[in-house]
Length: 304
Image (cartoon, rainbow, N blue to C red; front, top):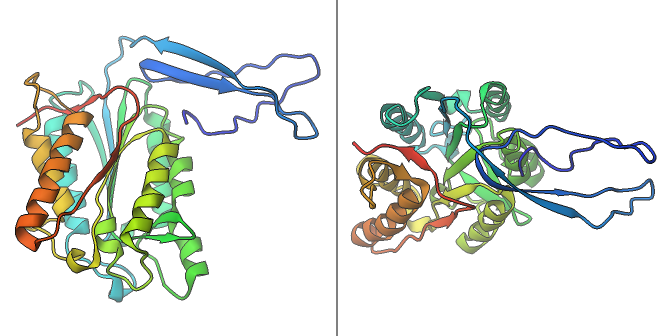
């Protein structure tokens, strides 16, 4: 999903239409079809393009969202807001070593992490992002599943019923629409399922995994996600959520190929290895992370 679908380009009878797409460097696939007034769609046409990098200097854009102090006090968490702030510091410190235009971080925590403000910040970032840039979205807080669809719970959630959650939560469809504004290499980091089971409305871990797996497949972005059960939902490790602790560790150490760059594959590998190890040692429960890495891996930071 480069810029969302459908594109909605009007086409007059026997006419032609064109649209410019801003594509990140690398191999890309575009698919086009035509639908008539009766809703009958043509056979799609698929085109593969190899986009060459330009001479512009890339930047790293980060939107870090963490909610610990929810409006509903019953949803209070220990580490989410702190983790978002620490992740922002780590990316700012290590990303500037790799990106010539630097790191452009946006931090939204607690009362500032509302559904509307998250959407607004996406729009602001989208105005300044360039095809050669990289985008990272980090979400920490409560997550749940309704009707098989994943929801991130922003600050203002008031749980009256499931209808209220559907209206107030940030659904996987919402996330896909927001990510469609970022036609660049993107990494989505979800530290939500570890706390999703802490609230009574949360679904079983298997349902969480199914919803996030679908989000991973449909978003077309690299996604790394945490997943836990109720018994360790609020514990954390060394002042962090376990997933984010391993993630921060990866940003420092995971240069496995020794090329002085830490890429998405290396981060995913490190988190996959460390999270089960930490949780088994501390909680006697093996937490298994999830990941979906589309296309070629890309560097995120330099090691410390």
